[in-house]
Length: 164
Image (cartoon, rainbow, N blue to C red; front, side):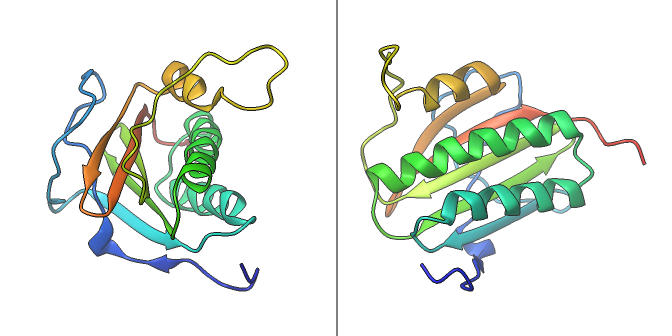
């Protein structure tokens, strides 16, 4: 990837769960985004810098929405894990979407793989295999759903407005 290449903002690719932060639904239904809901989505080209690019976009967008520091830091960690998985197990561009609805912040990462995400135990010496365990333990909820060209893996976090 050319490091000067910028992500493409594509609101038409936005897909987010319909669950509330306290639900334990794994494969939410698609929904239209109503007025009053803040939503944004990008299509990121594959390449070695895409996880860093996703972190930067996440930090900037959640800052614009005045999401608190703790939630923003957790979101950047979890988005890195999901984008890394999308790069490892998929092909083609990676979709990144964010929605904030009240105190619920939702992230979706889209890839073209039809293989569902599965947390797996990692041996102490292994360098990989812990990403979904982090998502499972830090997110209020998470899951996946299939879209016409792959899947969206999503997570939800509870957020509070940053002090101004």
